[in-house]
Image 1 (tube, helix red, strand yellow):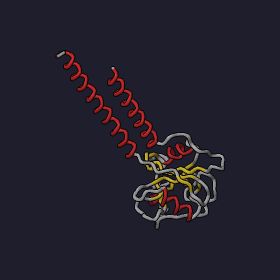
Image 2 (cartoon, one colour):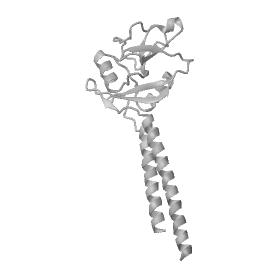
Image 3 (cartoon, one colour):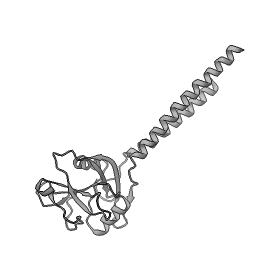
Image 4 (cartoon, one colour):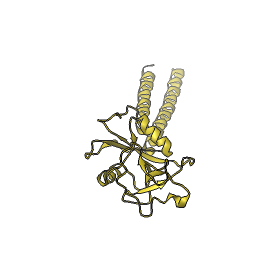
Length: 207
């Protein structure tokens, strides 16, 4: 009987250690997902397009590629109403965020990645300044403005990584992406860990 009691005591301690490990893994997963808190994907009533900010910092070129891989493009803001709405609902004050404009092809000639007319601008005073001739080829919401005005930043040869905003046109050739965001992957992993913890407890209980 004493041996049986010692066995059950050791078994209980082992189960507690395993549960503590699973709890720590779950909390770490949730913390990771929270740290990379991409915005929600929201629809602008003015054009029916969806927008989402992704907080994993990428270079402008890599951000453009990532948006394309999700079935969209880097956000193109072609009116004051659209620019203000996107900044208020998807932008993050104090965070430099890539948008879908560039003058990489010809210095000073800005273009949208979608080929839409470049007719509206919302530059922060003094911009675009091309880094005083040093070169800045990509469009971004600037971190030092609370009104969502624009800045030029970065070069093709420069590893300047920032958050970015993707845009989708549900009625156009783009499409809704089925690729989960990093935050969604964190939630999926956390759910899997909880499920494994439940299976572990049941197996221990009826072993």
